Image (cartoon, rainbow, N blue to C red; front, side, top):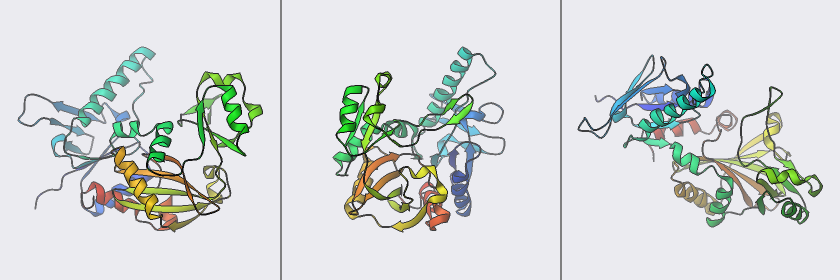
Length: 318
């Protein structure tokens, strides 16, 4: 019997979602090499050779317990890896070392021709710009709430005043602390009176509020679509998970087709979409997270999400 080709799983140390997928890969008897780029050194070794072998790439990724031949990797699950920061080095040395890891380890992995990437980091990065997401969603026929991205206070005040309710959303989630305390930015209502000249420092995203009755988190894995309706009564349901209730729903055919086409546009094989359902039952685009969370939904809904990821990585579905 031919030995099955391995799957690389790149993620941080404590990732329950990755654990779920690895459990399913184990059930399929698919070998897994799990690593975190932050472990580079004694706990993670990469070697890649070019120009000296018949194949275009020869090398390996090695952890204390597993080794994967780069020419033999079946798929890469690029989940939530952390890059090293080298806190024991001075600032310039740390920046230099971090860049060498990103372009050395990352570049060697990107050189692999055969594996399926779920998803490729370069595709994730390209798909992660919210203004571009809005434009692509609209081009694919999805309903997009009126949105303004600006650092012009006058234009921002005019936009806010022209709609019944408007929210401010971050353009990208970023780790943030204040006085050593971790902070986060929720989706919040904003008034014209709150906007002052400090807005000029950076672009802000303002969006008209959808008169919603529920949110939808839609996970696409290959061509499989898992849609979960999240009822909460909250403007931002992430604020209180204990207030949420879940139900499995079917998407309208046109919306499902548009979401699949959206992923194809960005050359992604998976993504987590956020939609809002209004009082008429219409669905509105909010955003795509090309590497979003879904693990907490599986026990609440019974949907076989982790099994779908494992089947995709194992080559059993497309």
